[in-house]
Amino acid sequence: MAEPELEPMEEPPSPPPSDYYSSPEFDKDRHVTFLQMMYQLLPWQYQNQEINRLTLAYFVISGLDLLSSIDRVDKDAVASWVLSFQAHPKSEDEPNDGQFYGFHGSRTSQFPGESRGVMSHNGSHLASTYCALSILKIVGYNLSSIDSEMLLTSMRNLQQPDGSFMPIHIGAETDLRFMYCAAAICFMLEDWRGMDKEKAKEYIINCQSYDGGFGLTPGSESHGGATYCAVASLRLMGFIGDDLLSNSATSSIVNVPLLLSWILQRQATNGGFQGRPNKDSDTCYAFWVGATLRILGGIKFIDEKGLHGFLLTCQSEYGGFSKFPGQFPDLYHSYYGITAFSLLGESGMSSLCVELGITDQAATGI
Image 1: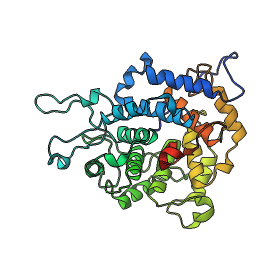
Image 2: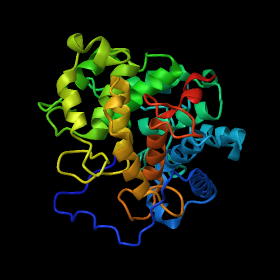
Image 3: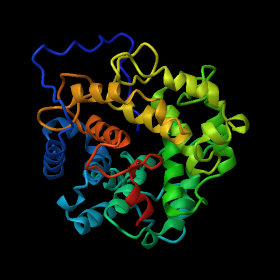
């Protein structure tokens, strides 16, 4: 989900060196090679992200699918690997024990608890479950084979009285990131028993700020990633329709004119998108903000030429994309750079289902 911004006391990114790599066009083959390398072996810098291994896999598999190169992986092997992370109750009574029986994020989160029964490690997680189901849809696995009743019944234990979701049964922060994961999970499983949609809707509405954007929690600062999570969740739940700007802006449950105004102010003079006012343009917000505009029916308002130019300054000579121009690429920004080029209609790429963050073909199963 949305990556943390620079802390207020941190220095802004240094300007790129005068000789940094910049390609005049989208280099699809390099990006395929970059993702294939990550599929085979992650560099050591990712060792502190071991707990998020399924999320990293989602970036790789979905990225290859967007690049029309999903045939570079063994789909059956990928599906078997993902399914091995699913949590299962030890008895029929356990689905009501307060735990969440979704998908673990890694092998380490599957380690058994201590002898006293204390769970000192992570359990199955909403974000990992969203990534797992997304990958399974991409590789063509039939989700009806999953015990969705157990997954969704236990997921409902994560919803709080205010409608929000915590990501894991042992407790954690509750915000719009996990609301989105819950909505996407229910949508992909075609079963909404995992949440109280009305409570969820009210929580999302309460996150819209005075300036039109959405914060991660009620009363917090508007943020590009949170705004996407809010709008995409409402769309998946059926509370807003297609092309909201043209069809139902006056009767919408959110303040659409104010939201559009806030979003359009996020495209900077260098063509890139920022996540918040007075922040530097960042590759990932080309998706978070651009996809929100697509859902609202306002993609035409993007300065496509400017965004295209900014993204190319973040394209690495090694393949992939960096957060800022002239830096090394990473999986997170590489994936969202790739999704941004799909949004822009880049030739040779698969179309993007912006609400789910996977290709249209994977989303529909056609």
